[in-house]
Image 1 (cartoon, rainbow, N blue to C red):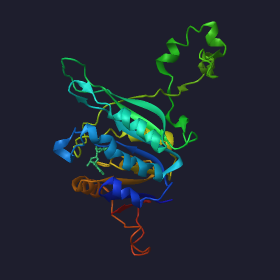
Image 2 (spheres, rainbow, N blue to C red):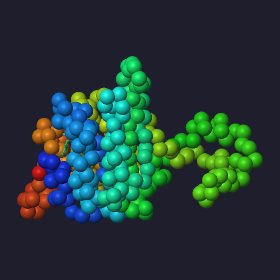
Image 3 (cartoon, rainbow, N blue to C red):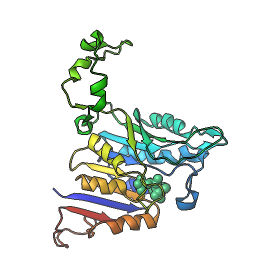
Image 4 (tube, rainbow, N blue to C red):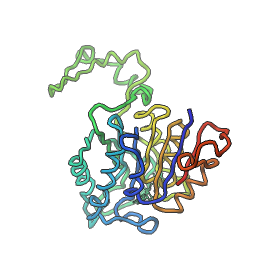
Length: 292
Ligand SMILES: C[S@@+](CC[C@H](N)C(=O)[O-])C[C@H]1O[C@@H](n2cnc3c(N)ncnc32)[C@H](O)[C@@H]1O
């Protein structure tokens, strides 16, 4: 089956209207941070951030399939010595729109810059908020399992009696664990903390995220031929990874330079939706691209 990559130039608030309802399996994106990158692609004042973003999340809610997932990479900035609250306000407003705030993953930036501040330490993590439309969404947990590693050697070496029987949750959640079940396994489910280095080699964009970030969520929440959307594509990291993993993808950016960079990285263009079929030779690779 052909894999398609479709890119749009313009404001996501407008461009998203072109995407059909309930059509996207996964949205992974890193929007512009409040006021952070004024010199490059314009910033949104922290006080206006929620009202700027809500019309976009409304459209994202429309285009996402009920079985789909939205991963939002965001981090509140420090203003006048205090953390802004716009991320928390955004979560509350998105819940009013109908989103479920299912989970929060942490991106631990392994290689963050050294530095000293009078009232805080180095900022070494960002939020990866998970939103869904329904409690029952596609999740392929086996695809992101990790080797048991040292944990198996240390924690599992001296098992207590409780560890050898089912240890029911003390808070009455109904969940329980029997750690001895894991003795013979070589893989475990990961935690909700992703330890990834920031992208230093991507010179095309000042705020690109590492390829491993969309890759992990694409593995976890999609299968081949599914559709992945990045409404703030920047240098196109999400699209490149999705294409490599044989997922269809759609990207949007408001800055022509970024749009052109992504376009130039894509193999020969076929305007597959706008042009009548049969006008082009069949492309040699099985994947194909469209640019609007
Ligand atoms: C943090 S960057 C994304 C970087 C991307 N994840 C990557 O790996 O290159 C945010 C992007 O959103 C774009 N942007 C800002 N406002 C936008 C809007 N209203 N609609 C579409 N794109 C927008 C900016 O041009 C910028 O490239």
